[in-house]
Length: 430
Image (cartoon, rainbow, N blue to C red; front, side):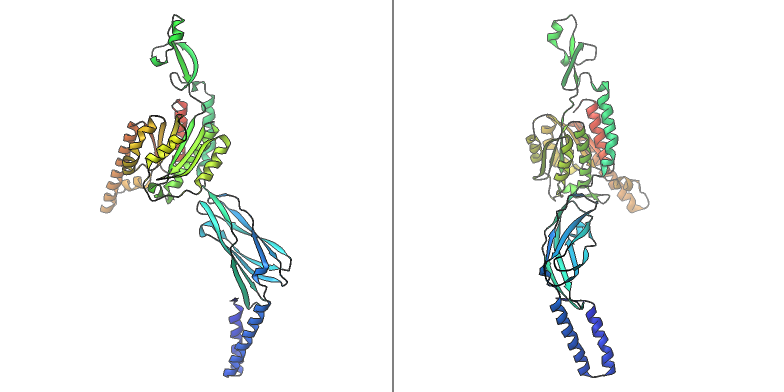
């Protein structure tokens, strides 16, 4: 049972009666009358149990996008049902205007829609539905809360998709160029021709040369259908925020743009996410089904405050297949984490695959290094310079081991990573 705002107003009206006839009996008589009216009103109110509430399924929505959830409320009682229904969700589901007025006759049904604008990824769930039905006088109400299960799957926003058309244009230009056949590089046999100075002697075809008076070499072209393996680090380094956005979310955005481009190029896309354990895995997706599968796999991922076990992640990459691939490690270029965790496992990767490390750079380091306003700012600038120097040294160390390093801020990282992919593809280095 609950009371409405009309009850205190009705009690205040009794002050007039007390003023006209100042006596304790008058006050108690008025209070008694109000109590009787409240009881009668409560008895005449429709029981909330007479309403059936069913929730319709909600489709997935991107983070920051808007969708709606629908409740179908049907009345199977014998009294008119008037009141308010509240459709409660998790705060991160962004449920707005979730209080609905209802006025149903017996046997009538109504559809109630609540707009949802989620602010976090993953499955956002409905908490409960509360129904409050008032009596004909509007003094009291019957209230009940029930569980009406429902959820909405919130997918990564994929802000970088705006860059996809321009990268697809570059891909079409790359595919259409005759110069895509790079002499002495690639893995697919193209043709035979005479040897010229500068050719790789390992490309000489001795059998064909024996049948002619000239030395003949094989020419190769880059394979058009390759494997791309995306490895997303969900350890503690991914929890850091850059420009108020978690590193994990920025890395996801870069991974999605590369996956979209690689699948359009006909490459097979594998995905792996984890820290000490593998959190998500998508195998062998190509062309149209690659992006939806990756987006769905990323929806539930959250940073874990543990160190990454790179030996386990590298072993998981090997479990996806032994064919040579472009392995993209989306992790932080943090010297301590890289040198102590990643470096021991790198030789196994670089011996079999082409490896690219993509990292989100914090632009605040550049801004701090440029400030010289006071003594504190100078110390901050020195610390920023030292941090940048450590990152540069780590990048140089990785490059010496055959790893391509792409270090850019969150806005530029997706573009920089796809440009590196196109460059490697152009040169036949995948």
